[in-house]
Length: 272
Image: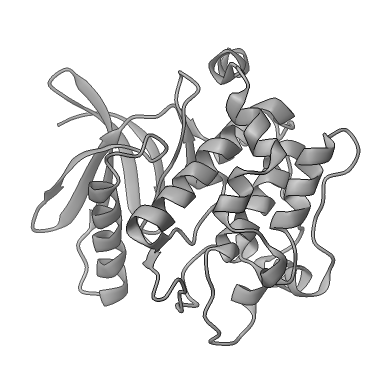
C-alpha cells in the first residue's frame, strides 16, 4: 500500500488515501485494543461492511488487513463527507433539491440496514455521509451500529449526543428503535438545508435543549413537503415519528427520487 494523503482522523483511528497497484482507496486504520468496547466497534464495522456489499447507498469495502498492532479496512475512495463540505462552503445552505437527493440515499441505506440485516446505525450525522465526484451519496462508519432484538436496541453509550433523539439522551434504560435514527436524520437535514447545526453551546447545553426546547424546524424558503418531512422526523414523541417505509413514501422523498437533479455538477461548482 502506497500512502497518498491523510483524509481524516478520529478517536478510533485515522483514514488515509492509499494506492494498491492502480487502485486508489480509502484505508481506515484502527489500533488493535484489549478494550472490549473498542474491539466491538472494529468487529461491528467489519461485519456490516462485509455484509452490505449489495447496497449502492453504503460505502463499498474491498477487504481488510489485520496485523499484530492494527486493523485496516480498505474502502472505495469518496471525495468528501458532508460535514467537511459544509465547512468548505463557509456553512452556506445546500440547495433543497440537492439535500433531497442526498436524503433519498441516506434513507435507502438506513432502510437497507434494518430490513436486510436487522441493524440500527446509531450515528447518523453529516460526517458519516460521503459524496463522490459523480454525485453519489453513501453512508459510512458502522462501528457503533447495533443489531436489533425484537426491533429494539438498548445500548445508551453509542452515538454522538448532539444528534441523539430525546428518548436516547434521557438517563433511562428504555429500549429504542430505528425511529431514534429518524430524529438524527431530521437534525442532519436541517443542518444541511440551513448550513448550521440547529442547537448552540456545549454538548451538555445541547442535550438540555434537546430535552427542554421545541424541536428545530425549517422556516420560510423551503417547500411544504420538505418542512413537513423534517417536522415528522423531529417529533419529540417517538411514537409519532415515521419508520423508513413511511418516509420512503413521503412526497418529498418520492419527488426527489424521481428528479433528474445533477448533484455532481453542483458539487463540481462548489469545489472549483
